[in-house]
Length: 103
Image 1: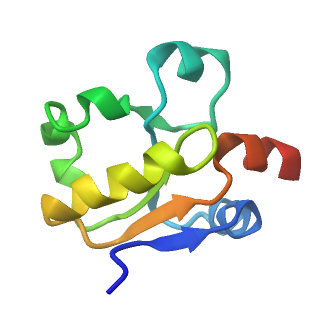
Image 2: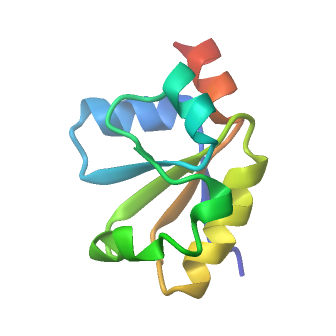
Image 3: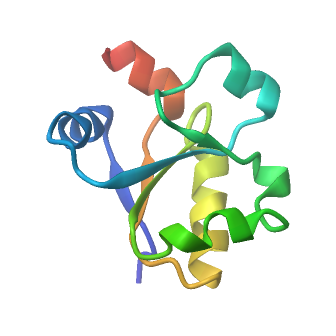
Protein backbone atom coordinates (compact mmCIF):
# COMPACT_ATOMS: atom_id res chain seq x y z
CA UNK A 1 0.00 0.00 0.00
CA UNK A 2 1.38 3.38 -0.99
CA UNK A 3 1.11 5.90 1.82
CA UNK A 4 1.30 8.98 -0.39
CA UNK A 5 0.42 10.12 -3.88
CA UNK A 6 2.86 11.66 -6.29
CA UNK A 7 1.73 15.01 -7.61
CA UNK A 8 3.16 16.90 -10.57
CA UNK A 9 3.84 20.61 -10.70
CA UNK A 10 0.96 20.94 -13.15
CA UNK A 11 -1.42 19.25 -10.70
CA UNK A 12 -0.17 21.41 -7.84
CA UNK A 13 -0.62 24.54 -9.92
CA UNK A 14 -4.22 23.51 -10.69
CA UNK A 15 -4.91 22.90 -7.00
CA UNK A 16 -3.53 26.32 -6.09
CA UNK A 17 -5.45 28.07 -8.88
CA UNK A 18 -8.66 26.29 -7.80
CA UNK A 19 -8.00 27.52 -4.24
CA UNK A 20 -8.11 23.99 -2.83
CA UNK A 21 -7.43 23.83 0.87
CA UNK A 22 -3.93 22.44 1.25
CA UNK A 23 -0.75 22.81 3.24
CA UNK A 24 2.59 23.20 1.46
CA UNK A 25 5.42 21.73 3.51
CA UNK A 26 9.00 22.51 2.48
CA UNK A 27 11.39 20.05 4.14
CA UNK A 28 14.60 21.64 2.83
CA UNK A 29 17.05 23.47 5.05
CA UNK A 30 16.27 26.99 6.22
CA UNK A 31 19.02 28.33 3.92
CA UNK A 32 17.46 26.59 0.91
CA UNK A 33 14.01 27.87 1.90
CA UNK A 34 15.30 31.44 2.23
CA UNK A 35 16.79 31.25 -1.27
CA UNK A 36 13.58 30.17 -3.02
CA UNK A 37 10.24 28.71 -2.05
CA UNK A 38 6.71 28.09 -3.24
CA UNK A 39 4.52 30.91 -1.86
CA UNK A 40 2.77 30.17 1.45
CA UNK A 41 4.90 27.10 2.19
CA UNK A 42 5.73 26.15 5.77
CA UNK A 43 9.40 25.30 6.29
CA UNK A 44 10.31 22.48 8.64
CA UNK A 45 13.66 20.94 7.65
CA UNK A 46 13.61 17.16 7.41
CA UNK A 47 16.17 16.98 10.22
CA UNK A 48 13.71 18.79 12.54
CA UNK A 49 10.45 17.24 11.36
CA UNK A 50 10.17 14.62 14.09
CA UNK A 51 10.77 17.15 16.88
CA UNK A 52 8.54 19.81 15.26
CA UNK A 53 5.60 17.54 14.42
CA UNK A 54 3.34 19.42 16.88
CA UNK A 55 3.32 22.38 14.48
CA UNK A 56 1.63 20.19 11.87
CA UNK A 57 -0.87 18.33 14.07
CA UNK A 58 -3.63 20.95 13.50
CA UNK A 59 -3.40 20.06 9.79
CA UNK A 60 -3.60 16.30 10.26
CA UNK A 61 -6.78 15.99 8.18
CA UNK A 62 -5.71 18.44 5.46
CA UNK A 63 -4.03 17.72 2.14
CA UNK A 64 -0.31 18.15 2.71
CA UNK A 65 1.90 18.68 -0.31
CA UNK A 66 5.49 17.94 0.69
CA UNK A 67 8.47 19.07 -1.32
CA UNK A 68 12.23 19.39 -1.17
CA UNK A 69 14.86 20.14 -3.80
CA UNK A 70 14.41 17.09 -6.01
CA UNK A 71 11.83 14.82 -4.37
CA UNK A 72 13.92 12.50 -2.18
CA UNK A 73 13.72 14.13 1.27
CA UNK A 74 10.02 14.69 0.75
CA UNK A 75 9.43 10.95 0.28
CA UNK A 76 11.12 10.31 3.63
CA UNK A 77 8.91 13.03 5.16
CA UNK A 78 5.72 11.35 3.88
CA UNK A 79 6.69 8.16 5.70
CA UNK A 80 7.36 10.03 8.93
CA UNK A 81 4.07 11.94 8.75
CA UNK A 82 2.20 8.73 7.99
CA UNK A 83 3.60 7.22 11.19
CA UNK A 84 2.01 10.14 13.07
CA UNK A 85 -1.38 9.41 11.51
CA UNK A 86 -1.41 11.87 8.61
CA UNK A 87 -3.40 10.39 5.71
CA UNK A 88 -3.64 12.94 2.88
CA UNK A 89 0.00 13.10 1.84
CA UNK A 90 1.33 14.18 -1.55
CA UNK A 91 4.92 14.19 -2.78
CA UNK A 92 5.79 16.86 -5.33
CA UNK A 93 7.69 14.88 -7.94
CA UNK A 94 10.97 16.47 -8.99
CA UNK A 95 10.71 18.86 -6.03
CA UNK A 96 11.15 22.60 -6.30
CA UNK A 97 13.59 22.17 -9.21
CA UNK A 98 10.87 20.57 -11.31
CA UNK A 99 8.30 23.07 -10.12
CA UNK A 100 10.31 26.12 -11.13
CA UNK A 101 11.21 24.47 -14.44
CA UNK A 102 7.45 23.95 -15.00
CA UNK A 103 6.64 27.59 -14.28
